Length: 271
Ligand code: BTN
Image (cartoon, rainbow, N blue to C red; front, side, top):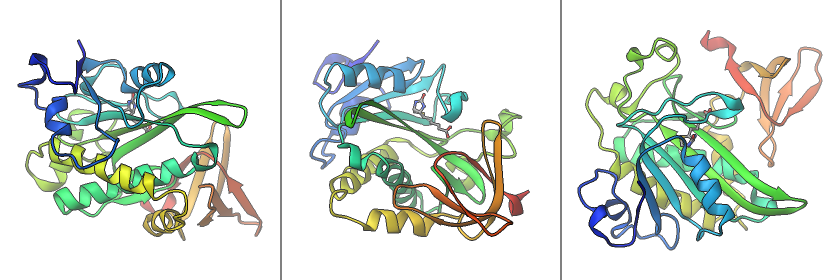
């Protein structure tokens, strides 16, 4: 079952109903069309299908629970009810594709700060942490033909009311907003704030170098001893800086500087 933001009898009575998300949202296009499912395999799959069919820019696919949520590197992303799992369809030009990671992670940080007062940090490239534990994951998928971007989908999963203690594989690495605050957190205000922040940062992209500066300034990774792994390859060194295209500049023990485009970072001093 899918429910659109267009008025209709199906829109009432759901906590994440399209109407409750779009009402007086104040954006120009992000979140002006919302497609809601009570349950879904993955919002990414539906968003990509919608994008290929030409969905209007800013369309949001949201669900109460995912049964096959996708994480980076083909991992599974757990998103039971009570959390946030959504995907946003955008049509950026190719030059802005690397900035989507920065804008999505900043939008999450700013919305969590403004709605809860918590102070999240960023771990390169796009993990949002609270006190060193992951509270949000971001997945960006795009359709690219040559130098042309057909579409980009920003997938955002936030642990809002997750109880990491219920999931042994998560308990030492993940947290949730409710765990941090000691109370249940309603999702709706956070979703609305998030969509506003995404649009604000997206509209600022073309001339605005400050998104890169803001993102760099929030990275807890910089200056730290880290291990970066990607498949069977692994590097160790000091995370010295990040380039404007989002890649990590790692100072290796032999003094060389390695540019890393993608990978999983372990902060060695958190172990
Ligand atoms: C990560 O591995 O850290 C990225 C996790 C991304 C999860 C979100 S939840 C909404 C969207 N739909 C998915 O299936 N994945 C992303």
